[in-house]
Structures are given as C-alpha cells and as structure tokens.
Length: 206
Image 1 (cartoon, one colour):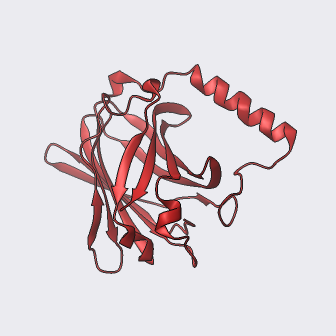
Image 2 (cartoon, rainbow, N blue to C red):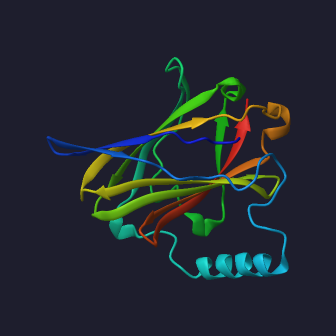
Image 3 (tube, rainbow, N blue to C red):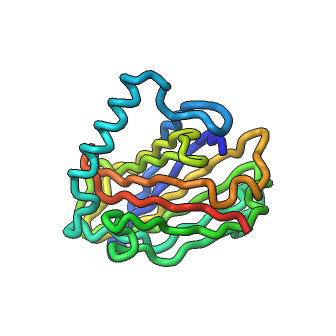
C-alpha cells in the first residue's frame, strides 16, 4: 500500500480535562511498488541495517513503568466512516516482542478498494511522554515496501488518548489473494529516541 499522509489529530483526556493536539506527520515513501527494499542494495547499507537491528535487540522492547496500553485500534472508510476493522485491547502481555510471536490481524478484503482509510489508535500511558511518535515499516514477503512516520507529541501522564490518522491508497493495488498473509507491519512507538514498545502484525485479507 502506498501512503500519502495528510494530517493527524490527537486528543488527550486526563480526568475531566481534555487537551487537543493537531500535528503534521512525515510520510517517508522509500520505494514505489512491491518487492523493493527500503534500503539500497549496497553492501554498506545492508551491513548498516544488520548492525542497527543487532543493536536494537540489545535494547529493552518496552518499559513496563510507562504502562503503555493500546485500548483499541480501528480503521474506517474515510469517505463514509464505515467501520472496516477493529482490534481488541493490546497490553504489555500481548505486545511482548521478546517472545518472537507475531500478532495477526484479519481484515476484510473490501478495505483494499477504499480510496483512503481513517485509522484511530486509542492508547493509555501511565507516565509522561515528551515526544511520542510512531514508526511503521510495511513488508511484503520480507521486503520493505515503505515507511510511515507519525508524530503525536506530548502525552499527559495517566491519560487516555485518541490518535487519528488518514492514509490514501495507491492508484493500483495488488489482489487480496496475493497480499493476504504476506504483509507484515512492523510497528515501533518511541518517546523521542527511546523505544517504548515494538511489535509485528501479519495481515490477512478475508
């Protein structure tokens, strides 16, 4: 899927007070089409990516003290608001990347015909996050298609937040039968440069 990111909005709720955040997101389109690597094919870049991944494994995948929980995530047809997919609660016991297990998302294949998708992430963080952001890499058969960068900003400690994003589809999409089970979305939440949590989701189109 090719993303053309428009705008994102976040709403943070703490007790009876609500602060609203409007921010722009950077969308880093690395390659057009499927089956092309995010990084170049040079040996130097390959070595650098391998070293980065090795270093990342030495870092904690999540800070339990932050108390980060994804309460829900949903995707809607941006043109009419129709709900296309919704997750359950993803807490620390589910988002345990140290286990090496992938999460699975079963999404109706009709979502591939939507010209744009509105995605909402509802999350809770027990502690303050000064520069909360999200990085996602989309892999098809192990090769990176593109990278999405999203910025939320400041998160109030003990707050529950709604983060809305809009993603436009590519002009041409591969058939659901080919994509189903072969797409993995690597998701990383950060506070600045500090990794909060990382997990992978394999997508099936039913």
